[in-house]
Image (cartoon, rainbow, N blue to C red):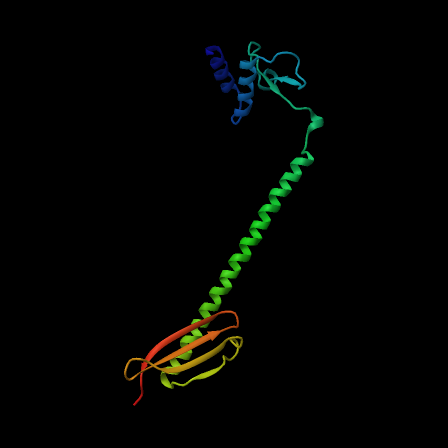
Amino acid sequence: MAHLKATMSKVRGRCPKGSATLLQLAFASISLKTIGPSPVRHRSIEAAHGMSRGTKIRTIQSDPSSAGFTLLEIMIAIAIVGGLLVTLIYTLNYHLGIAERQEFLTVASLLAREKMGEMEKKPESVEGDFPAPYSNYHFVTQLKESPFPDMSQISVVVSDGKDNVKLVELIQNQQ
């Protein structure tokens, strides 16, 4: 084992940086001592790296006719990419739905506050649509007596057909 470590340190000193895989293959071929003829062609590292003749390290080269990807590898890669695309599209659609809902809540809340301000000045029950560019928003205002003396409850409901926002406020009755 000490001989192998010494040989490995010699090889590390002479091999270019980034040859860790080459060193691992060399270490495996030294320690395992391949038995019998191998179907894979071998090339001496000595010639490639200018090492001394005493070092018996061989690297494995695959047969050039087996270069490329198999049909199975390509199909697996396509399946993985397809799964990722489906997940990406689903996530994008989900987040766009959330953004659309938040846009509605923001616009409807601001419109309802505007109507509430009008109701504080002139309380009355009214129903209608907002002017452009908010013509797809509908509002309903209600004026009710509250259980508290000299107080009235005003409510504003703003909707777009799917969702609605409701604001309720107590105001003092006008004398």
